[in-house]
Each structure stands twice: as C-alpha cells, then as structure tokens.
Image 1 (cartoon, protein in one colour):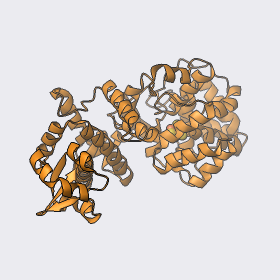
Image 2 (cartoon, protein in one colour):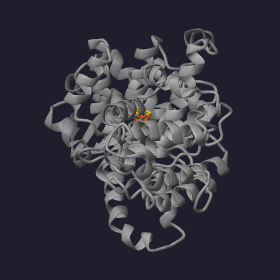
Image 3 (tube, rainbow, N blue to C red):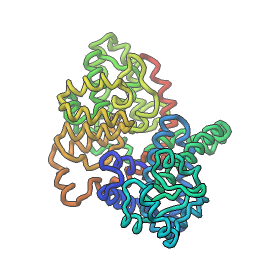
Image 4 (cartoon, rainbow, N blue to C red):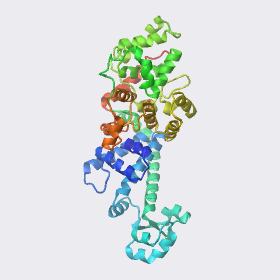
Amino acid sequence: VLKVVENLGVSYVRGTDLYKAKLEVELRKLKFPYKALAEDDYEARRKDHISHFILRLAYCQSEDLRRWFLQQEMDLFRYRFNELSGTLMQKFLEHVNLPFEAIGEDLKNELANELCASTPGYNMSKVKEQMFYKVGLADAVDLFRARRVFIKDGFAYVPFKEIDAIVLNTYRTKLSKALALTARSLPSIQSDERLQPLLSHLSHSYVGPDYSVQKNTGKISLDQIDALSVKSFPLCMRQLHRALRDSHHLRHGGRMQYGLFLKGIGLTLEQALEFWKKEFIRGKVDADKFDKGYAYSIRHNYGKEGKRTDYTPYSCMKIIMSNPPSQGDYHGCPFRHSDPELLKQKLQSYKIPPSGITQILELVKGMHYQLACQKYFELTHDVDDIGFSLNHPNQYFTESQKLLSGGRELKKEFNNSGNFQQKNNSQESINSSSTPTSSNATADTELEGLEAYFTED
Ligand code: SF4
C-alpha cells in the first residue's frame, strides 16, 4: 500500500481529484480498508493496524527508512482523513482524543463578522458554508502566529481546510516520536530470535517472482549480451557490464549481483562459466586461477556446489538497502549509490535528454530510487508511462524485452484502461513492504553463507 502511495505521490499532484481517484482505485484493488471509520470490515482493519505496527518496527531502524515511512503514512493519512464525512471526522477527532469540536450554526452566525475578517480568503458566504472548529490555542500556534485565525477566550476558530493541517501535524509528531521510541527499544526486540530475522529483512524484502527459474534458460547467446546491456538492462546492470568489459574483473559484490542477474535472464551454468572466464582471462587472472578461484563460486550460484541452493537474483530493495559499494566496486543501485553529478554525467553519456535527466535527479533527491529507474526505462524505451511498478532488475529486463519484441503495447494499455498501473501491480506493490516468503527469507540467509565463497577480489 505504501509503495502505491509513494508511486502516486510523485506521479500526480497530491490532493488533486486525479490523484484521489487513482489512489482510490489502487486501494480498492489492494482491498485496503481506506474508509476506516465507515467500513465494517473488522478483519481488514485489524490487519491494517497490525501491519502498521509491524512496519513501525521494521522502518524505525535508520533515518532514511523513518523518513520514507513517515512521508507515505502522512500521505495516506491525509487522503483518508479528507475522505471522511463531517460527522465521521468529528467521530474520528473524539476517537483520537483531539478535542476539536465543530461549532454550531448559532455560534457561527454570532461570530460571522469576526470569522470573515480574521480568516484570510474567506467572505461571508464561504464562512456560512464552511465548518469551523474550536481549537485550544496551543494547537493552533502556527495559525495564530501568522494571524490567520480568529481567537476568542483562549480558543482559535479554525476553518475546516486548516484543521487537517493541524491533525496531520499532530499525527506526524506522534508517529515520529513513536518511531524514535521504537528505535530505542530495538536492541531488546532484536534479541528475540522469532522477530529478529523478520525485522532485518522486512524493510528490503521482496516476495514477487524470484526469477531463479527462467523459461528463457539457454535462449540468450553470449554474443547478444553487449547489445542487450544497452537496450534492456537497468542502469545497475549496464554499469556492471561496462565495468566488467573495461577492466576484465569485478569484485565480489559485483559478481554476485551481476552473476545472479545473468542467471535470471537465462544464462545456463555453462554459458556463465564461459562468459566470466573469457572476460577474466583477458585481465590479470589466468585460466588456472579462474578455475580454482572463481569457477566454484559460479557453480555455487547455480546450486551445483555447497548446499545446492538455487540462488535467486537480487531485488531492487536488496540492492538499494544492503551492502553499499565502496571505492572500486560497481555493484549497488546507481540511483541510490552514485554521486548525483556522476549520475548526471552517466545519463548524459547514455543520451538521456536534459529534461529527463532533471526529472530523474529530482526523483533521486526525493529518495525515490525505483521511480527514478522507472523514468529511465520510459526515456530509454520512448514510452510515456512504464505501466508497471518496478521492484526487480530482472523484471526490468523482462518488461523491456516484452516491449521491444512487441509483446506489450504500453501506451495503448494505459489509454484503454485509464489506469497507469499494470494489472498485477497490486501484488508487486505490496512486495517491497511486506513480509518475505519463507523461501526468499531462507534464500537470503543462505546467500550470506554463499558470500563467504567469494573471498577472492
Ligand atoms: Fe537496478 Fe533496481 Fe536500482 Fe533500477 S532501481 S538501477 S533495477 S537496483
């Protein structure tokens, strides 16, 4: 749900009718009880409450996560609050102990002149049609300071359109404090072995298709990789491929990220061994050293050594959230881990138009890395709307191939349905903020073990 909120928040102007309509469609698809006080679905509301508190635990762990979580929760809250009718709004305010009370018609008529004179942008007829709330001065300090509200006997008379700002502010302060408090109690929670694995994976977990089993296996030839890297690889993999071709070597973080991606797009074990060997022996590694030091780890990647686990390619969240690259590394997500100036130069060299680069850099600045990558997809594939919610580099590749082979008409699909998300987006959108499946969680744990095999630089 929060992923959808993020997506729409950067694609449309928040609060506009279009934004609200899109959000409503998406929330309905996800069966999210967005009209909390109006809907009787107790089970759905219960799930919403529980998942909110689980996400608090998972997203309190770093400044970045907290900021992201706060932003999406605030947007969702604003939408839900504004969707309530006057009576439900009043009920909500009582329910959360916010002592704001809508004043009656008699009092409003009595104060009409003062309300009109003290509330900027209000004339008499607007005063008559709008609800005003009686709010303790302490809660309306900002309005009072800006002389935007009528004050009498220690109370501010706040028009409806300003009350949501006060409620939102209160919510932000409370949620922010709650996240800080939760972060403080994390050490004791993390010592609970039932919760610890869940919490450490939740914020960057992924439960979409794992791309480890490919219908494509063996359908891609090694000769095609250079061309594919330009046309259909996401920037992270394009960067790794370029670095490998240039320096005939990748350090272990890069080999893991790129090796599993290539496996996901369909390279067989034999092709992978040939691909890496050919490249490495053009550099400082001779054939013998490659067979001894690197071939084992490639077979391991394909589940042919060690625990014989079929390892899954990394999702965007895993790449973005874990193992940041250091000097000399090429793995990671360029939108997350590159210096903006370098990213700009890279995009220029890939002939992305200046306006597109500005849009991408804006998204990066707002920490919307996957959305920046979606924009890169749109610009490199010349489509107006990507039509899916990006969560995985292999998904990027698959969608690109579908599009380039004419298997999908993005613009047409968008126009016909009037819906900018792809049909299966709802599932994929939950993915990045939901619990990992046990198989993925196991794979993650086992990957930690696998990394031990990549000792050679
Ligand atoms: Fe790669 Fe995902 Fe970053 Fe795109 S958003 S560059 S696919 S990690």
